[in-house]
Length: 339
Image (tube, rainbow, N blue to C red; front, side, top):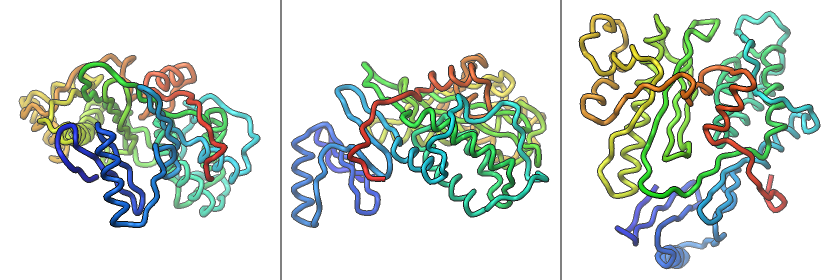
């Protein structure tokens, strides 16, 4: 990301190889910058952004949508599942996969190719983050059980190819709001937990993470504390980024956690004796709270929006959480898009 100018004349330029994304408040400044670039380099102006690195973008008055419909359909086509029956959830709640599966092996190269494609689809589909993260753990020696889980995800995608994220223009000042959550010893092989982190700018989700923790937590509180520390790192970075883009001081980021003991652990050093076994890197969140960079608040479990990133949910709960994090059907036109 490059910046140019100040105030209303400021431009932000995102670069990926030979692709440039230019945005700013003044259209005349944008046009001027384009002319200057054309004088220096041989380049084409494709106009308003509609397609970028497999992501379809629609820009309307007060609304921007991101979707990967064409990419999702291509994945289904490559797997021979374009005519499969759809399902309503990407992973059943009772599924427990293991590296010690005694089921027959499958083609590891094909498995890795499909899962790799699904991982890129997660760029606009936070509802897929947990399930794709789970099947990614079995790249080394996948079996028919693991492949069945992948096919279940593909069946879910079949019914939601046109789903994506909608960003609506909001009135007033928008702030960063985060959620962190964790399961407890969800991985049946090494008993490590999964951290889920989601950050919203106003009402729109802008960052999400579903990731197996690097250590074995000894309690649900410790698992939640490790997830909160991961969320704190992301929150501080997002706060600095937003402040830099707006040319303002980074504001305090609010992080919602649904475990009261974890919140006490973040705020009260008296608990040190009870947490001294926890790796020092995870105590980063304590410094953030003391320095007023992060405000950790309690949220009811029913309102914990990162829950969808830590476990496979039942159908009704999953559909509710998917709606609340802002993943929905968006109208796209793929007739002019390349595969």
